[in-house]
Length: 633
Image (cartoon, rainbow, N blue to C red):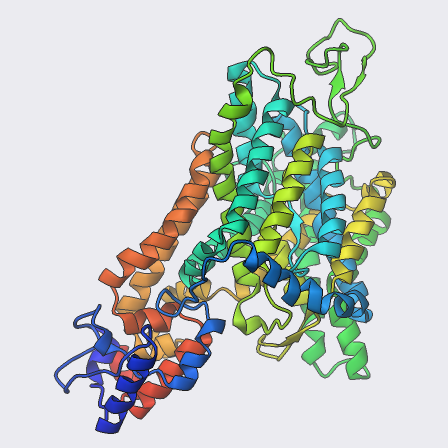
């Protein structure tokens, strides 16, 4: 039974009249509970009369809430007007302040995120080379990361957001390569046309206010997507079951990282594996330890403790890199496989540039040269219908990019993060679409909002209490700009980047995933499966929602999370990934209300402001929960 069943809701006549007045003024307001002591919140789940009163003051603040379908801000259709408003309230109002908001934290965050950006760029680039037959590689990924990051830091609307390569987009690029091969069309040409269509769709979506759909992505969908991205970082750092990456695989003698040293007499793969494990886990642990110094009694002053916390990840990287290169210099560990020079990855066998040297032409002694940077849009192999046919896969790619960006922006701009410089969903949709269009023509990978990197950027710039709640955030463009200027510089100093051991970078990825995981309410509820009910953390949903209903809600989320991870991981079905993400929204809107009462959905899925309003009205109605008696279910 529902916990609320034990506590009948009582209301005064004055309260009923107030609710009636609110209803007359605003059609989307909620009503008082009109019930006697025999009614409970589990009955008549869709009856509006079952909701606690939301006062007129709370109604006035609803426009700032994106909590749930019942409190979602409805955007009016205004052709281009929303884009103009986005520009006015973000870069038009705060650009100068954000470009001059510089302090010690800016430097510390920039170094941390540089390592968090350059390592995935090189790693993703290597995987791109495999799935696209070297048409796109590490050089292209580094170039795209650098120019898109600098461009977005200067003109983007929400500079906390970090653009980067993501697994779903990478998987989609692999699908496009196979499709181009089946049609006997050059991959880069086909990819360019698909990307230009995506750019057009993004423009149409921004102009027609399609971003209002994202406003229906409540905490339910946000938590699933955020947990998925966090899990990818954590699992890939420790050992992925779907590909040989992570610390676990160093303990396998046939792992590719041992190949170049297998003929050395003194080489021991076990020694390398053990040192790699120490470097990876040690980097994560030291970063967390230094991160907590700010609220400890150690060090001589608050400013010193703050500095240690700001540079925690950078210090951990430097310490374990020195440990590897100086103390254990005789033990070989894996390093990043960086390209030799800055040039397109595809080395052509002939002037036609349709075969890769030397793999596709073993009889050719010298390569003809690198592919040109500009893709020939009309190299269609006689198939003039390809530019039009590309609109179909581009529609699916658009759904993927649109939802990836939108949900990440939604997560970043959660009210609990205390950001004050506005949002720009429509304007940034155009910016991301433009970058995809340019990258497509240059043969570069598409970059979208990188969820974990963006959340870590947010957390690193935030000032928090000891219990990890945001006080405020240093809203600046400079950290984003500095990060990608350093990525650009690293293109011309690749040998320096190669000094950083890969296990240390695995430790950074593990740290980033765990930091993002710690703020995910869904993960907190999942851990309650293994807790004694009387020891549950003190949250509104643990007080007023029965454990059975709470666990049922979490189980539905975990089921969708598992489905997303499986679809993403199996290449044969990975193209359906955006459809599964999109399906989470109608499931929340139309399926969950049939399983849970609206009061339960408010407590489990709404934003803090709406939950606080519910709690106030519940207290006024005399339904304070006696948690101990109801947790015995």
